[in-house]
Length: 249
Image 1 (cartoon, rainbow, N blue to C red):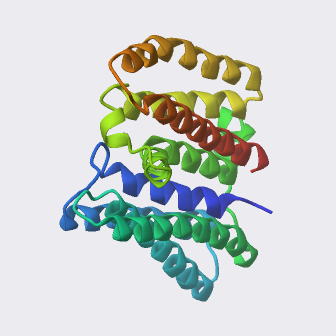
Image 2: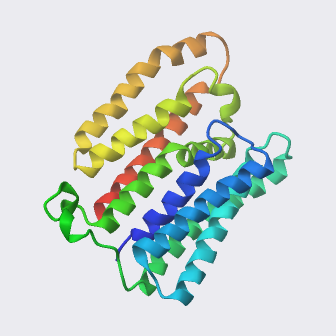
């Protein structure tokens, strides 16, 4: 089963979330702009890459855009400090559900696709001929999701287990930038079957963060260790999951 629609949906989510990088909450007009960017990615992908029958194309677009909107609105409300704890919890559940439903829709939707884009003949002698176009869509979608979307997922998870990122990230600075860089490196290494090298990246992060963790503990009671461990393991799992999608594509 092709994963091209999964890559397309992840790409739409990743591009949409780029509009709220480093912002837990964004104004409504900006959120609508983010959704519009995701919608453009979906339209271009459906029209130019997979080309489903017109009727099924509209259905796929509606379902994928609906889950994208639910993810964007739900995750934004869950991270909004003005919302009550109950509202944040429900919004967080809605956001995670939207992610799961979106992936399922993308995996099942490929059954109605009877055409995939292929590279033109004049590219037969180039390096692109070694990588089918649908597989490249999956890889691009995975990479896009590692940037901001993965950061949001991790923040929602930390909030869910009672280790909010808002205060702890001030003690371990650079997580919003280092996390995506680390995940992309792991995805790249995993995509070329170099999981041992990816393991070295994981070990190096622990060694580099250890002095900061010690210093944070000396300053007084803190859950920064739990923040680091849960956040790091979640980040690694997302990266390894992305590498697995590329491998299976």
